[in-house]
Amino acid sequence: MNNCVGIQKKVFFVFGKPKSGKDFFISMVQAKAAGAIRLSIIDRIFEAAKMLGWDGIKNDRSRAFLNALKRASVEYNDYLFLDLEKKIATKNFDSAFVIFRNYEDALRLKKLLAYPVTFVLMKSVDIIDGSNIDDRVSYPDEWFDVIIDNQKREYMDLSEKVEKFIEEHLCG
Image (cartoon, rainbow, N blue to C red; front, side, top):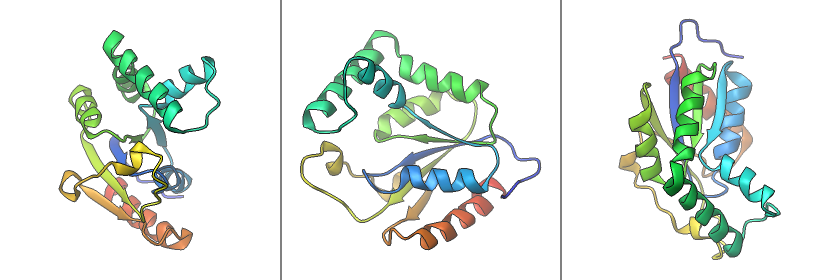
């Protein structure tokens, strides 16, 4: 476990297509770096959708439902952004990893935060079945401060990259 003495709070916005390894990367960082937390703008939407009968399966119909819930929430009271801002401001952490798909959402949250933000892209082989609108999202490299190449999708390869990331971005 890496513990960086005197570390100041750091916030990382993590992007990537479906199955690119975003959650796996964050879980590996959490296993090796004390004080790392995972957040997502869409977690509250998933909770609300499940209370309204969503079975957790993502398909075109459910994605339309989830997108409508997100849009309604933002239009009604901006809860998703305010909730994330509050969590980042009040939670005890050394590093927060916030998962995004929408770059504009990330820029909007960044404006609300008192901490510097590092933009991270998880790059991997596209796993596209054609039914997922998120498959067609593209992220230009120039938007990002850090790019984690997960093309091999192998544990040992990603583990080495996590160690390097921790050393350069959490301890450095």
